[in-house]
Length: 215
Image (cartoon, rainbow, N blue to C red):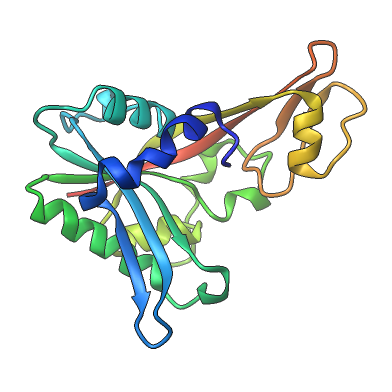
């Protein structure tokens, strides 16, 4: 996920240019960061039809043309240390990010959520997957379910939230696979197939996300 052109260019500046909007969850006993939340403020009208295309668009808008009067905190990522997963820390980070938005006078928190279970169903369109529910009526996807349990509202898909493009050799290095022919390939961890064009020496992956809103 770090190989997207926009992410490579802008991600490193989030912490230094927008430090007040970043969250770190500390284990005081070990003096270690066990989870993080990354976000930047943007201007959003509240109209679903005016949502950005996704992560790439938010990074360019929020960092290249920062709004003079931001209205919304956009949560871009919640990262939990591998050995700490399964303890509910992602929910704590999300609640902390909601608190940051409130303290900064921002009326909304939105997130282009990467559904954690979608990689197990890469052939299912994101528009269908995001509507799946469990027996209790909550989202089938675990990460979407956390958002909804905390009061989040699932809005709409972001089918091209982030674009990762590279040569065939780069994609082979990133994925650990061999792409002998052109076509669409299932890459471990990807939420939908990666398109490989050997004649053009190009591979492209469009990361689909789901917009979620927290008032």
